[in-house]
Image 1: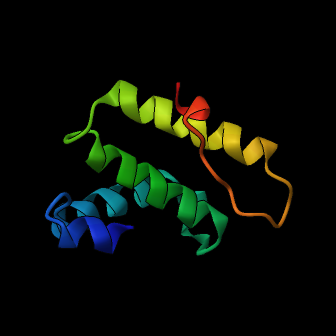
Image 2: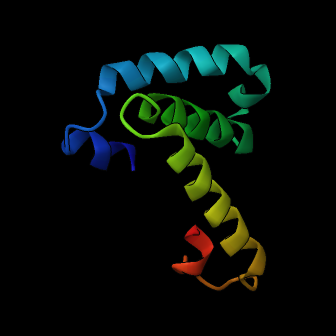
Length: 86
């Protein structure tokens, strides 16, 4: 996702790297290279995107993904519906 956003000019790679580094410094548990790292990665991505996207829209989109994931059986692809985005 990060690479796609950089290629499209939506995200600056250096800014993201700095933001991720700062996020990792603030979250020592994320330095394990496992799940914590990915939590920090998403937090840094959200922070960078907050400068180009409406914060409320990001919150709604995130909530829609959480709802879709909660209703999706394990092993099945998560699919958003128009209903989950309202």
